[in-house]
Image 1: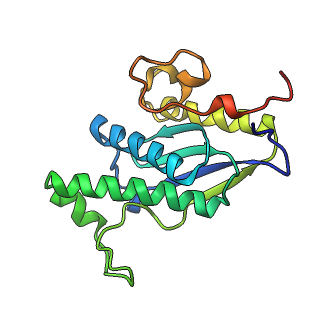
Image 2 (image 1 turned 90 degrees about the vertical axis):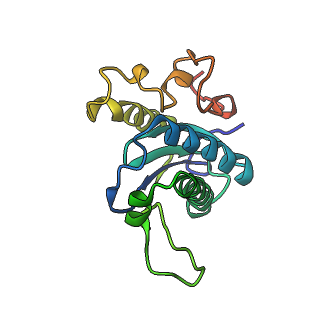
Length: 181
């Protein structure tokens, strides 16, 4: 169980697609992203508490089992690999051209993510709740849906205890030990 505190915070992570490319436009890409996030969670053995997939970025709240940079390596590495593989398999040459970069020491020729992700430390349940609400309101603020519950690609239904039969990504909310309840 995770009691959120200064000694055991949560992390609010934001990853932005390279050049703000709207990679996450189709439901298929968003579903692949959900599968990749789940794979990253299992590989890194960390908990996911909230998420939203926006057209050009992700917001994710995790526990602090790993340092934020290491958690981001799992999240961005696996999602980037799965999405670039999908784009290659389906001959999305225009998108791949936009993600191409000079060959680096590891010899990657494409990169999905901007290399300056944002990590914020959440030291209390109040901070977690503020960021969770902010995350779930993102699609509303962007004009994608009128209400957070109408956006399939977020954890809002997990928090509202109203998950879909085919919920794309379940959260680890049972791992939070709430002080206030």
